[in-house]
Amino acid sequence: ATPPLQQLSLDHVVPRSRGGDTSWENVVCCCLKCNTRKGGRTPQEARMKLLSHPHRPVHSPLLIHKMDNPKYITWRAFLGGAEPASESA
Image 1 (cartoon, rainbow, N blue to C red):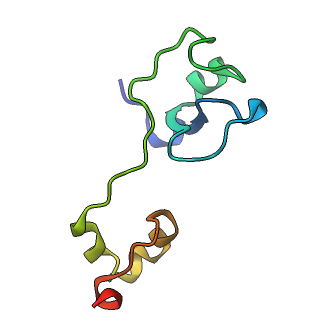
Image 2 (cartoon, helix red, strand yellow):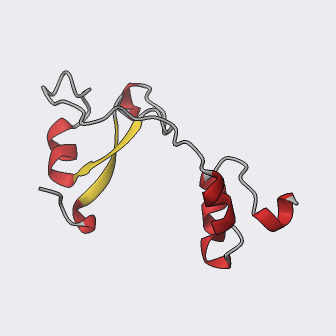
């Protein structure tokens, strides 16, 4: 079952308390219940299995066109240098 958005949180695979950073490769989405259960442990220590391993997202050329829409301007900080099509022309 997929929990509602209000019950989702970001979890550090390697906890920040143990030197884990906040990066694409160390952060996953999980429900609050599982995040609390895992606590300051790694998934292996908590006897939990990652459903997918975290990774940096791949940029799609189609996404760049979304950047022209002022509605998505806040996305720029998360898209690693992606620019709107109008600025890259």
